[in-house]
Amino acid sequence: MAREQWGTKLGFMLAAMGSAVGLGNIWRFSFVAGNNGGGAFLILYLLFVLLIGVPLLLTEVSIGRKAASDVVGSFQKLAPKTPWYLTGFFGIASAFLILGFYAVVAGWAIFYFWNYINGSFFTSPEVGYEGAFGQFISHSWHPIAWTALFMILTIVIVLSGVKKGIEAANKIFMPLLAIILIGLAVFSLSLDGASEGLKFLFQPDWTAFSNPSIYIAALGQAFFSLSLGMGAMLTYGSYLKKENKLPSATLGIGIMDTFFAIISGVVIFPAVFAFGIDPSSGPPLVFITLPSIFEQMPFGGIIGLVFFFALILASLSSSVSILEVPTAYFMRAFGWTRFATSVLVGSIMFVLGIGVSLGFGLWSGVTPIGDLNILDSMDYIASNILLPLGGLSMALLVGWYFKKSEALEATDMKNGLLGNVWFIIVKFIAPVMIILIFLNQIGVISL
Image: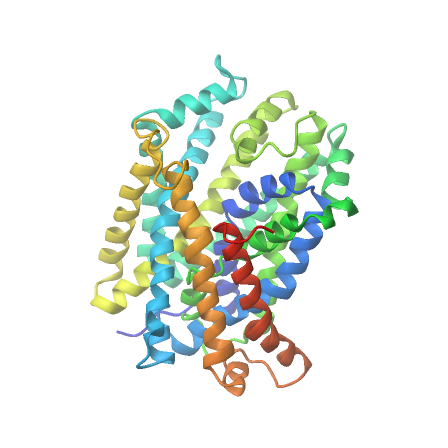
């Protein structure tokens, strides 16, 4: 069976951008930046995206294009008769765990979108937004139904194929998401007191640079916001034609991913400061804090509706790439059809999502890791263990297993200054950085 391919290089870039731009940019970036002082964090985040993120992105995409296979098959093809292919299962496992909880949070976004459509959230519910959110996520089956709807949408796009499903969807999603976020940012900037939010985001507190934890937070956000380590970019790269040049494409993806993160900050922080909210509100910022801000705004109900529609678009574009990772593997390994594979794999992820959802209600006392609930435990394993190990294995393959000439050829780089800098980053700097993140996150070292 001939391997599917992207219709155009732009189609690949939009799909890869869609993979990178998700809840991590809008939901996670806002509270991580808020918790780490805003401007100082942003400077470090931008530096790490450019110096570490983009070189690793180029590395991952090049492995996929060179092998024209999935995350396990690529290692089998490029490092034959070695156990290297086993590292590909880090990506498969992390995809199941991540979409297992990602779909639940995305289901919450659809629930909020629906409540803005019917006008329920135009004004604060009787129990307040915090109370309404708590009642909803702890309900035995309501959030599961919204998770199911989100997974059905994801599966339908993936089973439609690379060109007609993933590429076609992202050609609509990404421009639409950009227009919505820019519009929301313009509105947010018009609020009284918005300038304080801009100062927080763009004027660094130079004393914050003396805190080592801000470096780890920025590096971790750069790493995870670009979807590195899971094999999504590798899988997308495997559908590229050989004549598509990689350096310009991956730089473009890195720049656009950063644009979406910053524009999300411009949407959120001016509004947060305009209404006197603590920017370090943490994960509840999007689902509790923002709806209460929208209520106080002119046309706030409409703004809330548009914002949560944008959040759904961002979630879908990422979830499609996550589902594609194991789908591509099982299709190749077992010869299954795309339709059957995406339905089966997506259904397993939905079952995991049921457990995550019940972890806020009936199973709220279940704490698989320490005092972490089911969602946080799955996030911890995927984000802190599997993704760094997956990213590390890809950097080591290209930096140490490949000859330098082979690595440069795979990435369309020449043996000049840029090529040499990229190779040094991938061979030495990136592995050290990933190991530092890994050891810090699992508590072996404290930075």
